[in-house]
Length: 293
Image (tube, rainbow, N blue to C red; front, side, top):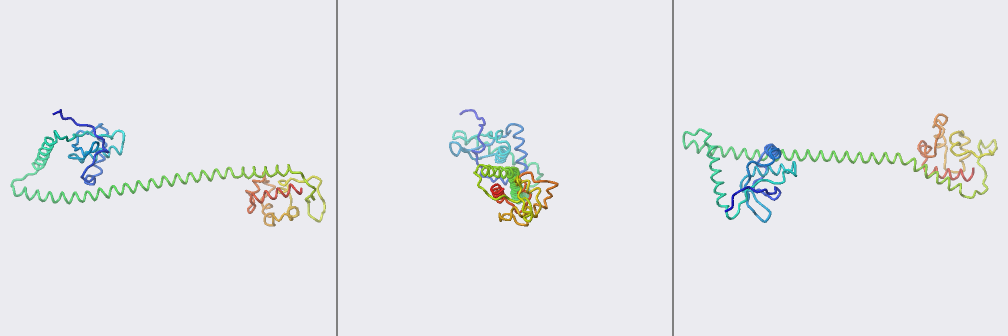
């Protein structure tokens, strides 16, 4: 028979019939971090092979769950665990060793309790077993509640992180739109102006640059942007009364923009500052002005 020595077994290939809730999370975390700090487990577990690459715990459930927790904390460092593997040629001997070791451990624990009479030992043992069973059940419930609380906290934290990332992304998109929209409007207006300039101009009546009563036509047509910055209500109304695009409310809003203090610098600026005047309407106004000015 070959010399007995522990083997390194992948933690994820091992299963246990004992629930993890039998052990306190704080104990598992503490032992897991000690395993990581020490680089291994001082007490190898005992496993039985269930298939070519799968094992079940025979002894060492606490150590196994601690190793599994170590793997959760640091997957690279906690990937394997030292284990004695029961093989057909040594299984009987190893199980016999385990039985003796377990009996010795129980005897040592009982030896710490003063038991002057055998009857007292029996009664104390029954009471201890009852208390241990009750305590074990309470501990399992406590462990389950603690794990649920941790999982709920992690889910809330993850939800908060995702919500923050989504809000930041939406804000980035809104900022990008706010930066690009005036440029797009300005480019669209400029393209339309160039198209109108390239068209062959047919003879059209000029727009008046003053009130209709004056009946005076300017020799040099005024630019639309200059007209929006300088003309009074009567002039603006006279110039746009045939377009059906600019009503008295729009004209009043243009006048209310304090053009003498802050003139319009571009058609996109006009659209941005005048409520109710959209970019499509602005393009139609430019089209009309180019044709008839």
